[in-house]
Image (tube, helix red, strand yellow):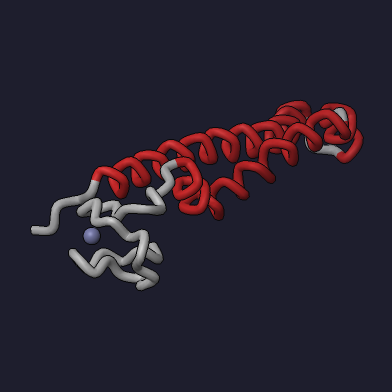
Length: 116
Ligand SMILES: [Zn+2]
């Protein structure tokens, strides 16, 4: 079995945490958009009710303000994780082989894919 390298492990942890934050943001956005609709259904569905309860700019603005970064986090999770847990430029992240003179996309010592 190939052992998971600490950097890969830390990136996976970072991705999980980023996705949790994204999930909270998306849930909050869904709530802030659906809450006024639910209240309007309780009071009797009419366009005037929805508009009165929605309090237009506040709820929709809050929903979009949390939905957009939430969705962005979902799509950019691995990039953010790579940014948060960088690979040391001078050494292979798996075997710490000195890569100063190597331009290859794989580590010449252990074959680790450096492009990941
Ligand atoms: Zn290596």
